[in-house]
Length: 88
Image (cartoon, rainbow, N blue to C red):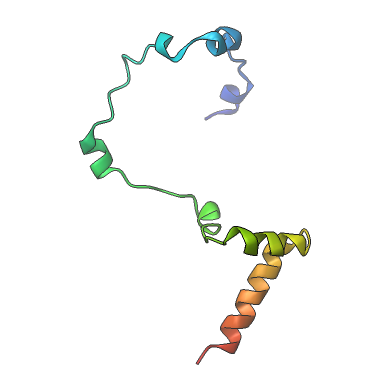
């Protein structure tokens, strides 16, 4: 994308688009998603988001959040401490 592309103003009539019902949208130029498509599809998560993919139970997360704005660093610190004390 060039700098020229970034300076162009959209000619989209956003008010008209937002007023449309889903049934009024023309999807004829988009091929349907078939079972074959989903069989071959691969989920790709950006690395920055992949670092956030740990399930923390709601009550545990709530407790850490109550400790202050830097709760993520606290979680990381506690996990690091655990690793250091349980390594061979």
